[in-house]
Image (cartoon, rainbow, N blue to C red; front, side, top):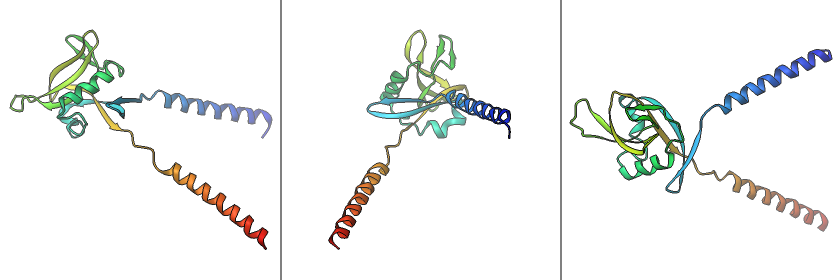
Length: 168
């Protein structure tokens, strides 16, 4: 392979690396701290009916005050993907059915309105909206302490070996 082919190969390889980095950085990830716990936050678009198995597992489902806490912390940070008669709105924090005997069924949500701040609203379970999905960030594993203990143990063994060799 001549120098020209090597340089071309290097440039093509770097172009691939840059493309990968650019693609990875365009993904939207957000970490929020709510009531002392960090949450990895994402959004998902669909009807409540199609997303209900996920939405009803969120930490604020059934908890009005926690839904407010999350909506207040997130506010408009994730953009305004939902349109309302009052303008752009952030993703929805669905927290309960309201009332269960309505037809079609509705759910209660908290959301951030661009010009008004936090708002309580009701939406049909068949309407297409963007909702918030979060999960707690796992605590760091014990791998670091185990590694430290292992290094200390190895250092101790090495020192013990030196002592044993000098005693002979």
